[in-house]
Image (cartoon, rainbow, N blue to C red; front, side):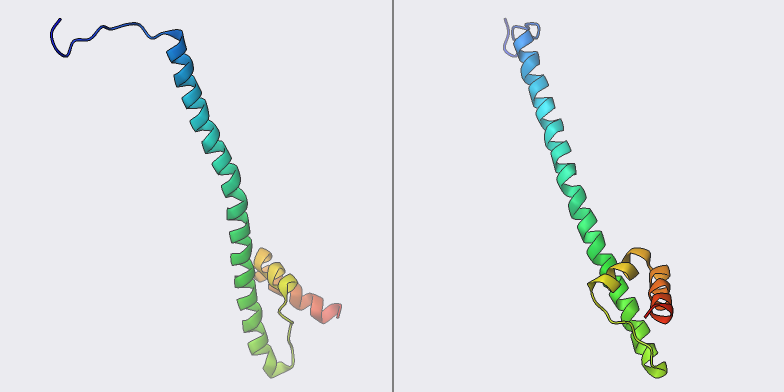
Length: 100
């Protein structure tokens, strides 16, 4: 035998099990990572939308001072405005005008 030549043996069944276990472990780590990342994305999106809703409500209150109209900014109104965007702000205005 020359150097660099090795004995080529067919893959044993035990080696295949080890490779299969590694592949299964990598897939499992990937799936667990995705499951943990999805709630983080949801929560960060919720916080971002709430901040946008709070800014929209702040602008509404800034302009509403001149006509005597305001909507208090609290977590509920910020989330409604954040989840629904401009329609959420319109909904809060209608709620304030007709209900309160």
